Length: 230
Image 1: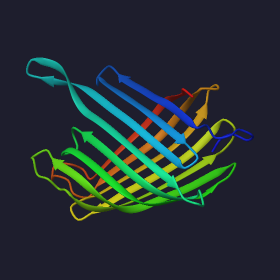
Image 2 (image 1 turned 120 degrees about the vertical axis):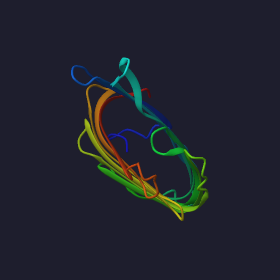
Image 3 (image 1 turned 120 degrees about the horizontal axis):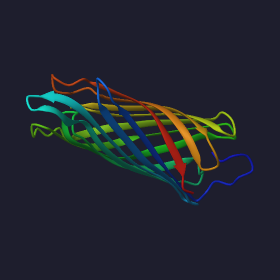
């Protein structure tokens, strides 16, 4: 959804970075980074995502204070959408890989394919969805495999509030017999200058099947800087 009078770029990419450091009674540091890329071709519309998060806490031990990693996550995904005769009607192929060290899962990976549609895309808002069957490859920390067939659905809503502010709501769910994995990201971004923006986001990650000592829902609230490379 480009600004008024501008054609959509054939390829765009932005980088996101956030750093939080606290000192005093509690000493922690968190680093979040992400790269998002979009490719718009005559027959294809493709999206690529790379995300990483690391958090360290200083804890008391018998030998004094020690820095320990309390969160470490890497997420990769790519989706290709092949445009049919009506370019708003598409066939999609999706793949993702997630390594979240403290989630109780060694890794979670998904492949899926099916139907996608751009319901509308005007000057102010856009809305698209995709749905289709797939397969998940999951291994828990104890070595148990939870591989199985899934149905994946996703929604993506964007609102261009003004020339300098944007809102986005993205939701996805992967329903399987062993586990249902869902993700929601709500974000608002505001431009600082032509290439730099500030972003406030709320990320929810939910797994229906987790170990007894783990929470089903993980939340992450972040304020980050986003730089548009091109």
